[in-house]
Length: 108
Image 1 (cartoon, rainbow, N blue to C red):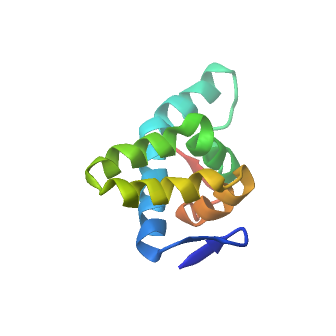
Image 2 (spheres, one colour):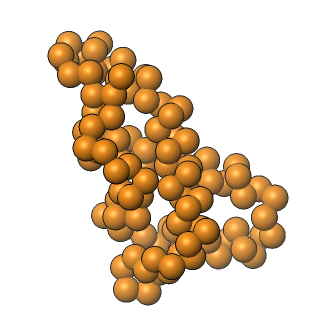
């Protein structure tokens, strides 16, 4: 069980699910993100962990992924999860998702 902020708690299976969806989002957008670096003239072939976290959490990508996965969950269970998720501020979400990305750099 992980507690983020003072009163928001996620179970171990919920944390595993969050991490899995964070990685799935990165797998989906990584190629475009890295191509964007090249298109902007960057010589880098990687993104930092902080950049990856920002991209994964940007535009509710992870939330959309989790909602799709949870569509068959009982409504009260899904609503409870997202009530807790939506309370988290950006910094708390970063702390929660960071363990899903153990490396300092991600690239090709």
